[in-house]
Every structure is written in C-alpha cells, then in structure tokens.
Length: 90
Image (cartoon, rainbow, N blue to C red; front, side, top):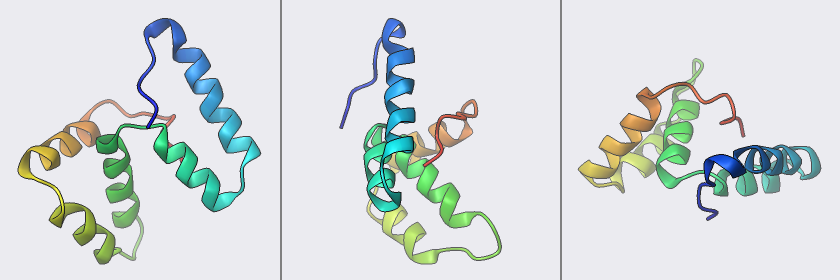
C-alpha cells in the first residue's frame, strides 16, 4: 500500500491515480487504484458500492463487516461520513 503524501505531493499523488485509471485494464485498474487508498477508505467505498442500486451484494457486506473489529467498523464509518471524496472512483 502506498502511504498518503504530504500536502506538497498531493497533486502528484492525484496525477498518479489518474494515470493508473487511464492506462490500465478494468480489473487490474481496480486493484491498483484500490491499493492507493487506506484500507478503511477502500472498505467504505466497497460497502457503498455493495449497497447502491436495487441489488444489494450481501456477500460483500458480510465479508467486510464480519471480518472487522468494532474499532475498524467505526473508522470505516468515519471515512464514509466524512467529506465526499470525488477522487474515490474506482
């Protein structure tokens, strides 16, 4: 996993994510872009994706929530309830 950059490196970090999105194929792109985010932010995105639309992906919800501690679930909730992150598009 790549650590979060300092403020001065933020644009380079976003450019790297943009380049990954543009130059990689579908599944490999999802994995590589997903690795650029913290585990809690990634879990928050996957939970959101599993619940959006008419079909809920129960297996995804169970896999994530059943394997996390209460503290980890709280941190996932903080990430999801925080300010919207338009860069979090896989």
